[in-house]
Length: 297
Image (cartoon, rainbow, N blue to C red; front, side, top):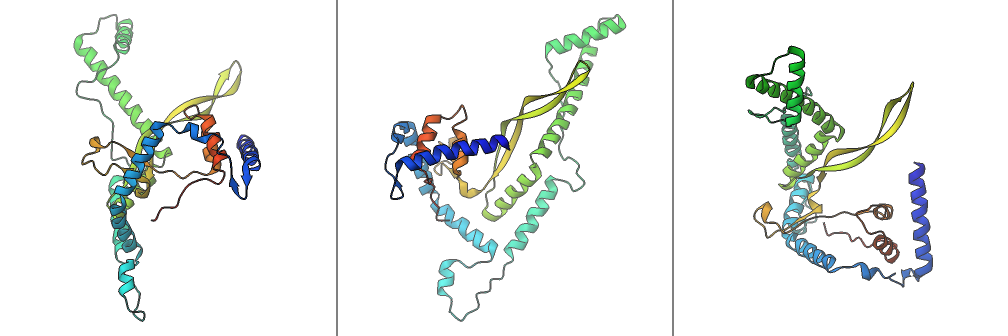
């Protein structure tokens, strides 16, 4: 919390200085040379997004009809033709059937008793690092005084492969539990049953600092280590803009995901090594109130 509060204060100081130095009648006069950060690649990507946004509009109308039916609302054209004294009640059966189907599909993927419906097993002829095989063979030779035969080596490899698969299965189960995989899949299934499309993004990898206790002499000390953790996320269909001209996923030229971020999150990008700090700061100075636009949907 202290680090976050310090970051917020630092950002607010920079942001307020930018607004005070350039504000005139509620508008910022100077662009702070923001235009120099706009590259030909950026213009090309903007053009592609405009194309994807335009091509998706027909699909959005179908999504809106699906959403109104799920929520129990008449379409605007139907409501406009209805007599003013006519009842506007909507017999909503779609919501109940959709939720029931989603719950059953979730139960099929995730058994109620918590058992896994998946497993990790070695291939019929597993392969291991030659150094590991050599180490196992030397241990056997030291213990028995005999050189292991080819059949025994194969048995060692199968035993070690099974042991590693069991360890990997436990590790994966722990990771899926931590990232709340069941909840993410439930949202994806519900989206698929409402709109006909559910979007699951991943698997991706994120870096996270974790504290560990390590022995030092007679004492124990805490150290921070960097862990790489897998994660995935549910993405609403409204935020995905694929190449609508492609018939197969491999034929897509692009696929966009729309993010709407507040000032602090945009400012945090300036501290990342994979973003240009001066471009982020220039953008915040040129757009002190942001430039996000509400979509029609």
